[in-house]
Length: 265
Image (cartoon, rainbow, N blue to C red; front, side, top):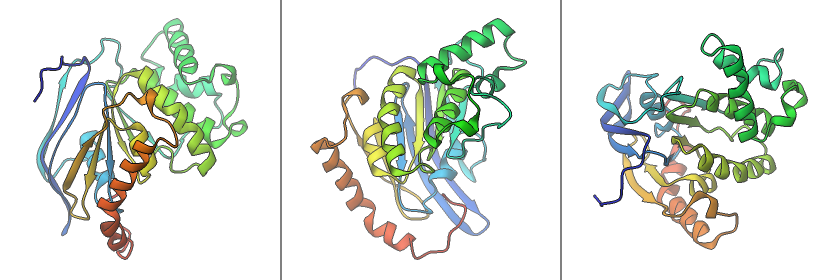
């Protein structure tokens, strides 16, 4: 422990979490803490239980054993404390960009407040000029940005992101990753981010949790004590950290690639 001041925001604590699907042991004795205002990234080989753990943290799935605790402060204007962003954009094609974002606010805010909130998150995500555009008119990166804006519109205390950039081509993913670092800094919300991409992990994570091959256990937790805004492509320190992560999971990843695909994530 250290004597640093406690940051405002939501803290998520995972205590002794294990999970089994039938006879398949997916997670074993997971202990983690997502600190307020920080991004915790989950990495590991395919099938190690990253998405399962995210579902447990978000309350979509009850663990076989263990608990998840929430502490700290939830903003007074928060409409949904734990909010997901998936790799599937899930935009309604008959609604404009502004209409898709407003969807999560309907019946929760009156018209003027709703319009103000939509305008705010469109500006935050660089979408103001596209408010009246239809999803079919947008690139994949722009559609994912709309999904992120929609998640931010409820002013979540914690964002849960399940490989939000994986469905994009490499060039679009790199460009959006640049924007993500600024966005996560400005949003200043706690986040848990699942990815297979180690470049994303070192660019976005304040702490990077390395899970082992199934049943997933915590092999290591690496801290990156550098502001997100100070991380850039080609940084030698980040490249070295990425290589360190790859060495940690390489053998498990090779073994996982020979196993049948399952729901463990």
